[in-house]
Image (cartoon, rainbow, N blue to C red; front, top):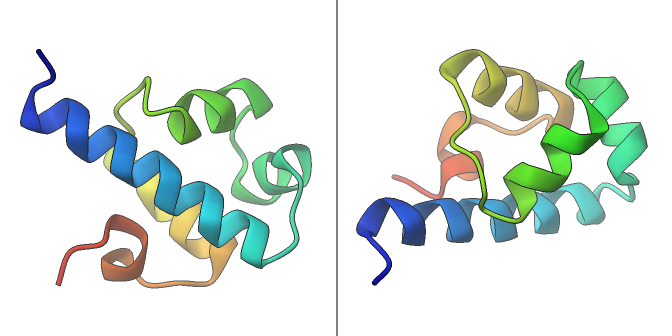
Length: 74
């Protein structure tokens, strides 16, 4: 049975992918821009891993969005 954390990670991954594709970035281009590995992008978008605060900051900066937009929290 999925937990609320699992649900958040899946929703976060979908949001991350939507923001990335809206910027017309491939996963490799985005990974390079965010200074994380290509495989990390894949795991994050699939909702398989929980990002650290440092990674969240890198993702937001690479996408040029604020943390609220990235996380979907207001």
